[in-house]
Image (cartoon, rainbow, N blue to C red; front, side, top):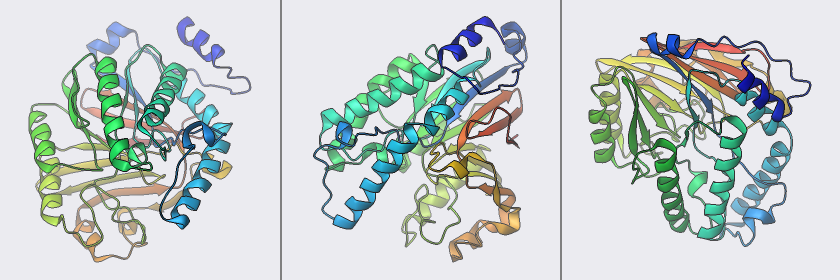
Amino acid sequence: MDRRNFLKYSALGLAGLSLPRLWMPHPAEAKARDRYSVVILGDTHYDDADPLKYHAGYRDPNPAREAAHREEFARNGEMWSGRCRELVKRAACLVDDDTRYVFQMGDLIQGDTADAATHKRFLDDAMNLLKDSIAPELPFITVAGNHDVRGNDDAVCRQAYKAYMTARLSRELGQEITDVNFLFRCGADAFVVIDFNHPGTQRIKALLEEARDARHVFVIVHGPVFPFDDPDIYFWYLLGSRNDRYAAERREIRALLASLDAIVLCGHTHTTEFLDWKGDGGRITQMTMNSVWSSAEKGEYKLIASGAAEYGNEAGKPLFDEYRPGIRAYSLADCAGAYKLVVDGPRVLVDFYAGASPRRSRRFILR
């Protein structure tokens, strides 16, 4: 461990957390090997233990829905007073000399604010806390999640998110970002960031085509591209709906992703899921990530489904029949933690650390 990281970890107060020694290639060696890494958090739902800090004046016209949201405030306050702080410390320990970025997969904040000023302050507090705690010197990149644009008036929150985040991400990346859908590059690879809340198919297609010359095309999107295996929320995916009214657009985007052999990095489902699919003449690999450590039990990696034959069985919906023949690998675990994407030339993998585990819990080979 080099002195820079030692001092950083000490400053974060990692007392009692026994960490393995991370292998860190010399920067010149990493560059020569075309190797880099990205530390990733899934959904975080950052919040404060005092609900009045961000949620003062919050109201929902549906009393049952408001009550459910207030239960989430209590959940978030409890986990961000303890467990999630430890998870963030663990994520900081994954940073090494070849780390280029830190990503967060949307639902950065809980949302549910009363006005634009509070919403921007909420976003800014979360961005600053996570960036400063993990790697102040690296670009911190996030994607729009449904909670990130939720409040008394969702339209106001969407405008607040776009105004704040385009300016912030422009500074983080050192390039002009004017929309919540955008593209940036890291060497030979392209990263396409997509807002799944209001997906404009023409904009998505244009960005994906722009990335066609890349070695690896990474798609960063909050909601998954493949329907989630759950009977109640299976339709929470890119261009998904209960009645599949966007079926034509969904299949068009899926075919385009397959033609690029895309790697999808996403969140939303509060699970750790890996899915590899071949179809439409190509391949899509999806890694779903979660950092909502809502209970102590979710700090351990425990499989609840494994193997292509298990995909879609829980949901029991005809929609899954369209996807099943192409599934080559599938696993699902109900857990939270931190992730490290490693790109080493043609090889791509993700290492997962459940909770604040000092040792790797699972390695996923994406390419």
